[in-house]
Each structure stands twice: as structure tokens, then as C-alpha cells.
Image 1 (cartoon, rainbow, N blue to C red):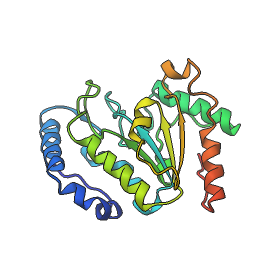
Image 2 (tube, rainbow, N blue to C red):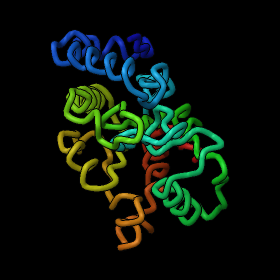
Image 3 (cartoon, rainbow, N blue to C red):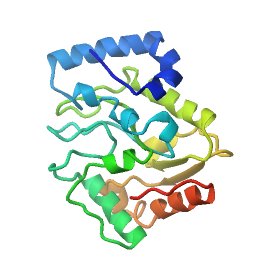
Image 4 (cartoon, one colour):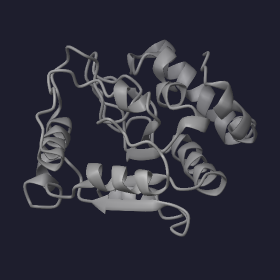
Length: 222
């Protein structure tokens, strides 16, 4: 299985790629893609890294698993390919965006590539999944890899914004250096959490941009 990742990330993640757990993970993933329908497409497994290159990263959003429905996952957390119906969590993200920024967002297109291209790393904790089988590639090594990514970003960069939505993301972000970075937390945008009052009104999009501007960086055009 050929996994391609941008050179800027290769340099900082090289040690990780050479660890035994990652070799085992690649073997597992190769077998899964060969014998089952898996998502996203092989060439999009590292899409988050290829769009938000290491030098460009300003914001990190942490998701859990790729979508497991046909044609949904595109390698960016919470994002779906253009033309695919927006899942409930993504709908709620767009609703909060509208309320926060006071403008109507184009919710027809659920592909968040526009964010990624501006340096928003849309990082799922687990980067692959078997079709129709949520969580099927958990505990195979991806979590160790994405923990390493978060640790490297925290240590080697300054003034990043980490958006941790829901309990899982908050746990994942425990080791981020709060003295160097802004961490914004809220409930998950899924209907279960959002409808209980833990998502709407978090104003994470304006808070992110205010922080970036304060640090002399260009804001995100959400």
C-alpha cells in the first residue's frame, strides 16, 4: 500500500514512520484495503497533511473516525465530498458558523478543503475505516500516530489554535502546551450534544480569528 504524505510532514514524522507499530499498522491497512471496501480512498488517507502542510498549520481541529458511508470520507475530519449530503455534525458546524459570523454560509458544499488550504489541519484520530463499520480501524496504531502529530505540533510550533470538540478530542489534546497555544473546547457538534446545549454559541470561529490576528497571523476565511 502506497501512502503519500507531503515532504514538510515527512521530515518531522520520519522517526514515527520507522517505528514497529507503524509498520504493523501499514500491514494491517494494506490487508484491509485489499480485502474490504475502506474509506477514504488510499490516495486521500493523508489528505489533511497534504492540504495543510506543516509550515502552514495555524489551526487544528480533531475528529475521531472517517465517515464510513459510501463516498463520504475525503481524508479531512468532519468534511464530505462535494455533492454528498452533509452529515448531522457538519450541519451543526455550519449553523454555528452562521450564528457566530453573522453571515449565511454556503452549506451546499460540505467539502472543507477551503479551510485545509488555509492551514487548518482537519485531523481525525483514526485515518481509515472499513465501509459501513464505524470504529473498525481503532486501536490498530493510528491513535499513537496522531498523538505523535499533536505532540510535535505543540512542541515545534507557536501560537496554534486547537479546537477540541467533545470528550474524545479533549482527551486527545491533553498534552498540548497551553502556555504556547490557544485551546478552545466545547461539546461535540453531533445532535446529541448540540441539542443539549453543549455546542451552539461557542463562537470558536471568531475566537480563533481574534487570536490569530492578535499574534500577527492572517485569520481564516471560514
